[in-house]
Length: 145
Image 1 (cartoon, rainbow, N blue to C red):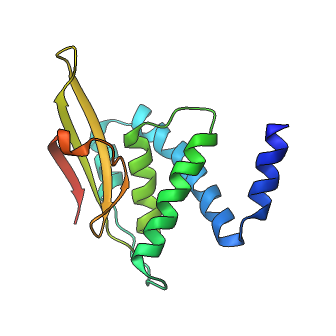
Image 2 (cartoon, rainbow, N blue to C red; image 1 turned 180 degrees about the horizontal axis):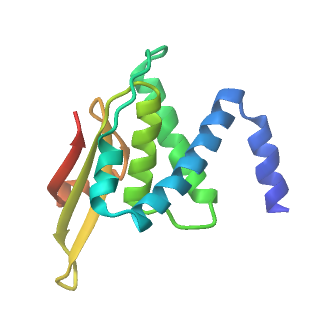
């Protein structure tokens, strides 16, 4: 029953939103494979690639749509998408729209004394992914701008 409710809701969205959700789901899958299987040197090259396209709408509107699409698609996929997977997929989506973004990798000391890592993405001072507790992390590296 839940499947049909979700399908009905998906069908009610405008075409632009449907395409954005499909793009987010596909890029989350590709990003998860890249994070899990590629050596970091290759992965870093993927993060640094930029594709410029002419901006047709406001950057804030596009960033908001990407933010929502990544979160919505991530909730309905059969796997858990880490903050790094989500930030990477969102970066690729923004890049396809000609928008620059910065992906941050940070660390902090965890409760058990082991390091915790976190990734978040910003676009024009708007946090797209990984906004929770990012102030508690020390930035190790950033990609973009």
